[in-house]
Image 1 (cartoon, one colour):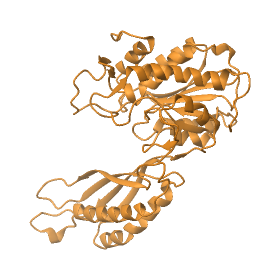
Image 2: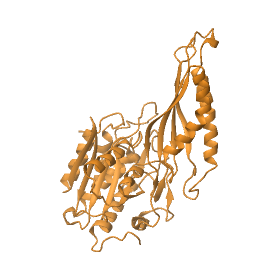
Image 3: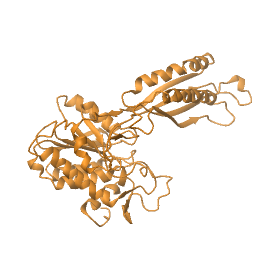
Image 4: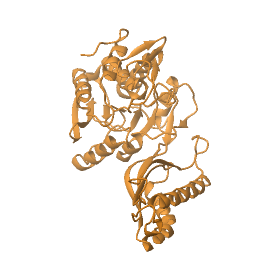
Length: 397
């Protein structure tokens, strides 16, 4: 049992949540079990959707089935801390002035802790419309958990309809974000022919091919930047490409036989990864043909893809979030979330939560204690508005 930081119940709950080291390559089963137990203790029905050993999504529901209810979603995993200059144990919640510091405090166990405490304040047994919690795994490495959950629900419960109004509690500084880009990861394998480095003409340098591939990616990036969209809502209103990793070569005295580029792409709302990758592949075709003529190759391979989000501006729960927001202007988030995948189930996700994305993934990640307490109040208020009010929540207000 971890030592809990003193303070309000929600602070103690967050202290427990961050003590689980749920970096994405680790199991989330213990944390998932705790979240399931909290939901059951509050009177909710719990389903566990295991996707692989150690990886499970938790779905908890209460109240009569209703698409006019409310769905709250957050991810259980966090990003690594290795190589970062933390000034305290990243898996022990530490209070420093008004900040609560720990890995995941902001992104996004703070929202999960607040949701748990808010539900304890609500008469769950007397809900008029459905309240659903969706806690996912492996969001940080490509929204794998939410993608698997969508596929499982479609396959195993095709007639199920979850509440349309969905809140993805990512850190937005309490700004309402109705859209965001997706995130796609792909690899480009550049294949050459090995040879002794003293006789380069006998080989084909895969790293040299990779350099030409990067030039083509840069040209494609400029082309995409000339096709902006949602400029009023997104700080980067075009599809972004990023060569994130390069791995190639075996020894300094060998002409490299292989070089692999790992590339991230963020398709804009309204677009999908498939056509963009096909367009890039067409641009690689002349280089591929040249390499193949010399015994090499250039191969593009998709690794993962999470969907962009574009929720209608007129959906009713945006109106209901305004009293809790720091800014009445509805905007977009520059980062991907589970909301893009969950929208495939007919949901209308809105990204809204405490904390700043500017401190997420960094050393001494933190959340202001006042914002954590405020989140409990806003979640409780939203549950009452959508699930407890006598009149059904209107979709368009």
